[in-house]
Every structure is written in C-alpha cells, then in structure tokens.
Image (cartoon, rainbow, N blue to C red):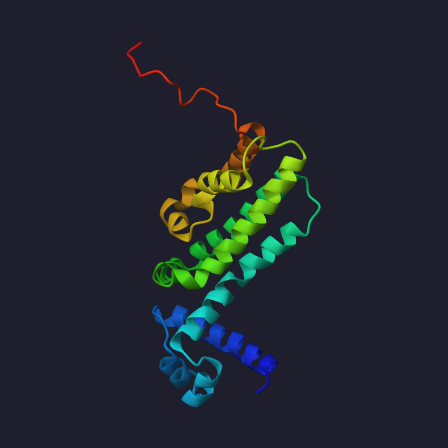
Length: 208
C-alpha cells in the first residue's frame, strides 16, 4: 500500500474504533477492532504496527475538529480581543457539545487522555504555540504590556482552563457559559499587564 492509502486507512480505522468505543463504552484493541470489522488482523497490523499506533490515530481524530477551529481563527483578521475569545470559545463549544451529547463517552475519552497523555501533548503544545502568536499580536497593539510572552501564556491558560480542560468541563458543566468566557477575555485585555496593582502588598495582614 502507498503512504496515502495507509493514511486513509488509518483515519478510517481510527473512526471505526471510536464508533466501537462509543457503543461498547470501553477502549478497543487491534484484535477487537479486527474482529468487529471482520477484517484480517494482518490488515490492521499493517496500518497500526503497534497498539500505541491505534491510540495515536484515535487521539488525532478526536483532536481534528479542535485543530480545525483553531486554524480558522488563526487565519482570520479579527482584532486581538475578539480573536482570542474565538480561539477559546469555539473549542469550548465543541467540548461542551461533546459532553452534553454523550457524557459517558466524553468521560471515557477523558480517562484515556489521562492515561495516554503523551499522545495528546503535541496538540496541547500546538495550542500554546498559537496562543503565543495571539499574545504577540495583542502586544503589538498595546495590550498585555510588560509581560513576557511565556508568562502571559501561562497566566491566560490558568484563567481559562475550566473552558478547555475536558475533566473540568464535565465537573463544572452548567456553571460555564460563553458569556462568562467573554467577560474573562475582556478582563484579560482590560487589565492584564506587568504592573503591581497592590494585590501582593508588602505588609502583613492586620485586623481593620
């Protein structure tokens, strides 16, 4: 088989594995996948030489729509505040819909993500890279003054983490909203900079 044929089969078998996981409520091995699809095990092994290759392919398919919306936002010419909001909100919208449509399957993917975090790391790193680009664009227009890009990225990720972490979405659920996310992003652009606003005062706390 050519590389293109293998890539196409990889995506197809990964989607079949995901559909099977959603029906059965459990992870799927190469052996199980071959049996369920009535496909020769050798054919599955030709596409996924190791069990980890199937897991990586499933991870790629799960992240694909999230990557697509990030790419769309990054290619847009929106002003920095709106662009950053869309960068977070569109992914949150997808994750929240996934959770509401099928909480059990969503939680299965969360558990798999915790066990096989290394497969997801490259996608998380890409999101951070994109966020750094957004921060640089914002700083070019006078926002986030005085902050190192990596520092701003870390702070912003902490501020919006409950909208992007699948586990937290499952736990917090209806206390999250796109309106609240918009207020958070607005606060980032209204006041996040390197100045000391007095919150970390140098004096000890005393009774009034």
